[in-house]
Length: 343
Image (cartoon, rainbow, N blue to C red; front, side, top):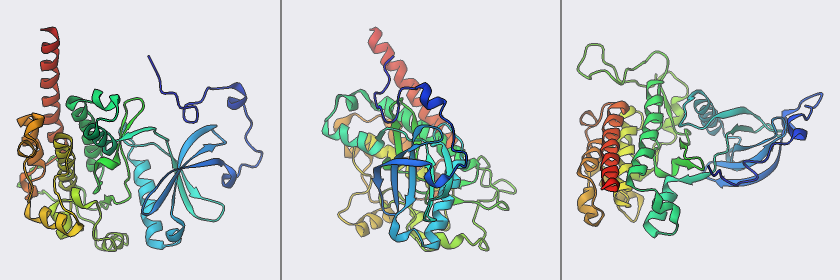
């Protein structure tokens, strides 16, 4: 079996590293060295660095300097770190440490996962730039999406809505692992408003989880009315960002499925305003009509359209129901592929 060759991320193990002594007075301010930039987003800077205590390369995330002292951004950052750490699932990135650097600024460290985002995979399939992208057929793409569904559903039953599921936040690692990233805009339900995402909406005692208005963190949402990325936001997310539940993530996942099927965004537009208007009016072309040349399976189109219905009561009501339908299609596709090869 071949393994990825990335010396920085997967170094050989030497005795001098495994047996190195810790400082007599450990100081976390000098624990991380040899920083290299990985990504720079709207609010955060992500680097790789060497953890001198454990002698491994890790992912190091901080707020951008210009907002690092902003109390609201600090609160969001702490929430992201803790949500990421508390959602311990095979399809979420392990979190190692949360702390302050030598200047007092927040940081947290995570497992450094090398690979491609689903956005990069989609772009490569569109441009046919790499043989690797050709090996990722539709069946494999749906298998990837199923793993994202598992992470999403796990979060839902543990009181968290992601609110920003999109191809850029889905990572396929060098070993085939799939990670749902970036919980920075997550909605966390308070302890007094538990929900059961398996319950029938019409059953006695059914209650959608809402954030307690007395919760101080509510301001984090109000200060950013567009918590999410426009092309993948649900209709209710646009109308009232506080009035969202787990079905908002199901909608967003449906827009990702649309892109996997068509290699195009579900809602087209040259500016944000146009995209938002089309989301509100559900102005889009169904997948098989958008790309008749791609031979899109009818079953997957039906799943996609059900996920993205404007009325959330008509969508899939839980992640596990969506998983069942996607896995049923994957099984059928593999049986067909095997039969074709044997013939």
